Image (tube, rainbow, N blue to C red; front, side):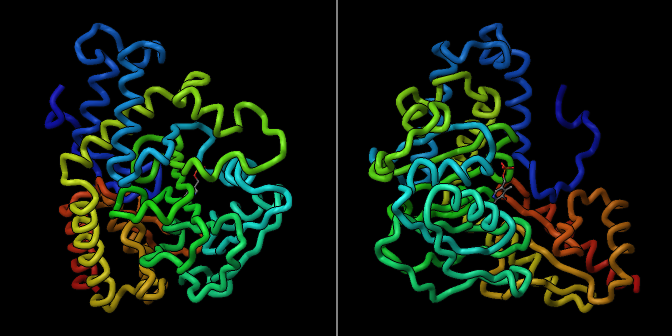
Length: 362
Ligand SMILES: *Cc1c(COP(=O)(O)O)cnc(C)c1O
């Protein structure tokens, strides 16, 4: 079936699981029927088959390519969501006599802090909770003896994003669930990066972990086999049955990223889209943003109606125009347009036109 014959797609601004490139959806659906013409569905193939081992290998290689990571980094595709990394990171990397620093920039950071505190001393350097997390705290005083500094590079719920990393020589652990592969990064600043796939990489079901080898084997506690990064490193993420289909769809997205021109092209694409939408939010007298200007996220764009009475009316407009997933998170209210890598410029233009039309109708 050709995609033209399908029902007209909605403009998908969902925060996650989120939009994927159309070509990835087509290739992924084909592989469910017949993987590369071999007469087996990807869903019914052994993860020990040469075909799947090659999928895993290429996915790892492309992750390294896009992040600029060398042989000192390991790439893992795990399960349990980014939420499991909240405790796995500390369990594997923070000795009980050690200290880790965290910055509290939202609900996900707060959860990471809570879990890490089970394993060692946690120093919360700063929090933006007092302002409903609408900015990124700066000027941190980072103790040089900390094992790591944990940050959430993009705060999916509140729409804030780090545009500059904190100044420090301490290795950074970053929850990049909602902005991984959205821009070039300096990998050498990171001891570890993790990301649930379902925001900017693939479907729900796998979690990407990139870890620098020198971070490992520094804790004395006993770690259950399945929760030990070393287990998965030794077996190339196939100690047990990996989430094979989600990993395959991630591979398709990683290939798409390469074809699109890689991280530099993504940065330009994402900046252009975000600028268009923020410009409209700032220009249109009916709407306003909720976040400190310099910390605005290029991935999740929260906004509210200036007149609360307009909220339901604009929500109805969105529904009518098949603009989907724009309802704001309950802790911010209003609207949130998630405009991840796969979001085409045309859908952002469509949303902006809807906002302009709404203005004219008042
Ligand atoms: C969605 C999200 C999570 C949680 O991811 P799960 O895979 O559902 O556990 C964690 N951190 C950030 C920044 C997120 O956006």
